[in-house]
Amino acid sequence: MNDQIKQDEVNKAVWAACDTFRGTVSADVYKDYVLTMLFLKYLSDVWQDHYDKYQKEYGDTPELIAELMTNERFVLPESANFTTLYKARHEPGNGERIDKALHAIEEANVGKLRDVFQDISFNSNKLGEEKQKNDILRHLLEDFSRPELNMRPSRIGNLDVIGNAYEFLIKNFAADAGRKAGEFYTPPEVSELMAEIMDMTEGEEACDPTCGSGSLLMKCGRRVQAKFGGSKKYALYGQESIGSTWALAKMNMFLHGEDNHRIEWGDTINNPKLLDGDDRLKHFDIVVANPPFSLDKWGVDAAENDRFGRFRRGIPPRTKGDYAFILHMIETMKPRTGRMAVVAPHGVLFRGSSEGRIRQKLIEENLLEAVIGLPEKLFYGTGIPACILIFRKTKADDKVLFIDASREFKSGKNQNQLDEGNLAKIVETYRARETVDKYAYLATPEELAENDYNLNIPRYVDTFEEEEEIDLVAVRAERLKLKADLAALEEKMDGYLKELGY
Image 1 (cartoon, rainbow, N blue to C red):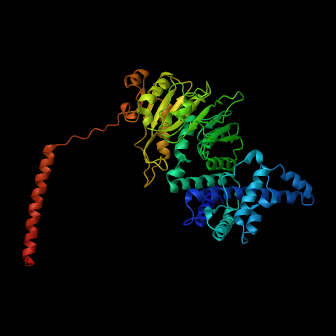
Image 2 (image 1 turned 30 degrees about the vertical axis):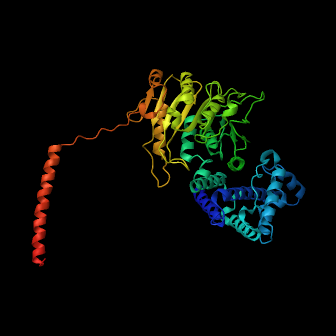
Image 3 (image 1 turned 90 degrees about the horizontal axis):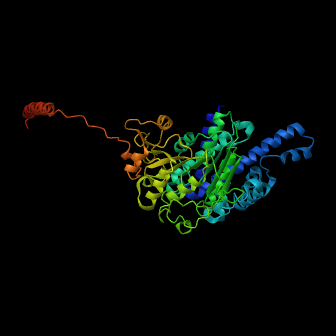
């Protein structure tokens, strides 16, 4: 069976597991239960697979098997095994048993999973009163015991299938649950575009200071794997402010085999956690993010005395945190190799006052490399069009490339998408760094200054299409002909009506 069939099978089975909750619990609540159960089942299946393999080889020496099992990527206490939970599913107390299992898994793998399950409780009254909760969890255990969700490596083969199923769920939750869920997920094609432009290479470190479920960060790592025959010589760093989303990111990383990561939990602007040995902001080769758009209450009061000096170019407005995230990211780029891609609302391109002054300084320092305008309705939970800003510590020239990719997309009812052709055109144009009629424009520092450092894309890329001239004489002749045809038709109609006695 090929990987694609397995993938579709697994995706279908995990999505069907959500039916257990639908109509009882909202998607933004039950997503955490389904995703955590997928992780628990994966750990159990891998553990069991390896245990059975050792038993075949060393069946008569249980001590050796036990010793070998302590070297597993994740250690699984027997009480925490999915099979143990499944066998007891008809007894009362499913919620409490699952919570205890998660706690035991965390204790046995504290270096990797510390606090990962603290924000989730299967024994919560969010799932209803005791009997209803017990029934829901019994159904959930039964859903995950289906043969399609046997995630043993010996059956699945390519473990990407599990990571992809996790991503599939996250994407569908984001599409289903709108704004609330959309905050933690960047559409895959936008992540793809940013990862391709950043073009991570072996030995580099990437960071996403608002990493959500970690998908964008992992796409950067995948570039290294694709270019260097599966190489894992890179490191991923992230920070996320919402505890349950931080836990999603940790599980997502492990399910994709990304063990070389450090994801911190906390508010990046007010409490950056990714620091170096000298308690300063750590620097990265690549910084990518899709921060919350125009965040109110981002932490303006502490900005003036920021101990990291992130706001020396100016303090963003109290109610719009876009530049707070951009300035943080600028500050964490490595001096020579540093480059970054950030998604932002179009307002960052033209809003005045403090934002205008910050924008001018970033341009004068020759950090801004490109501005890419995206189509509307690409992002979950907001219809507004966004743009991607590309900054680079060492640029090839002093110009800024503007790309207007807003009119080329695959349209959908609720969500538009960028297809492969759209993405390829953007990347090609970005790399060529030349003006393309009605699509891209390479602006000089003088032109930017003339425009008062306003970066609104239509100021640089003229997409105006001239209308064809109308031949009024031909239109009049056509009209007269139609009039004559209509008169003849009416006369014919009158004849028929007379014949019929009307």
